[in-house]
Image 1 (cartoon, one colour):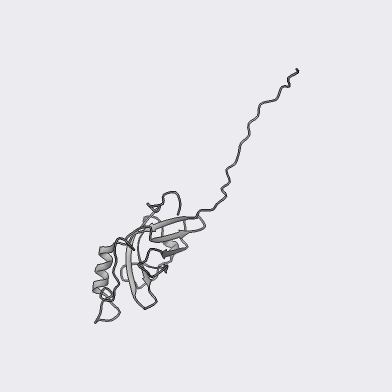
Image 2 (cartoon, helix red, strand yellow):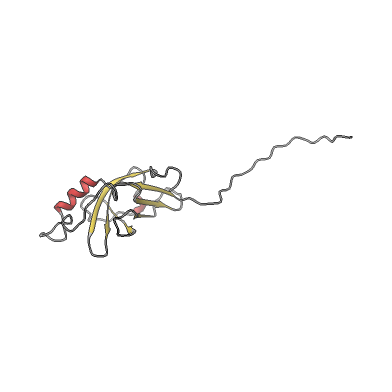
Amino acid sequence: MKTKWITPRTEIETFVPDEYIAVCWGVACSVDAANSYEKSHGPSRWETWYALGCTHDGAHCGNSSNQVVQDSNNDGIAEGMTEIGTDGLGTLECTVYTDATYSTIKSISEVGAGSYIYWTTSAADGRVWHHQGRVIGTDVTRPNAS
């Protein structure tokens, strides 16, 4: 039997993912600070948001996996923010503000991991929740995906 010499060669495989996963950040509402705001502010001087049922707790807005800041382009620039873990209100869009006066809207593209932000969510019945908290780089309950 005759053997044939084959020159050694290296082959490199390129990993190509078959699924796209968008980067996202989470943000937990600082429920004590938010409840304090709701108790001292309201839609009129006779009633507070807190009295209207706009309360904050750790199981809902206080959980970082319930508010998600999306970066669907993976370019480090946020494109949107939603609250998904509401208490029976469905998915709510978030509006981000520059400070605790909730008077000047801030572009979501200015938000990044580490930012301390103020945001509101609204229900169909007119109630408004005033949130605040720090954006974290990854959702601690889902470290490998958004």
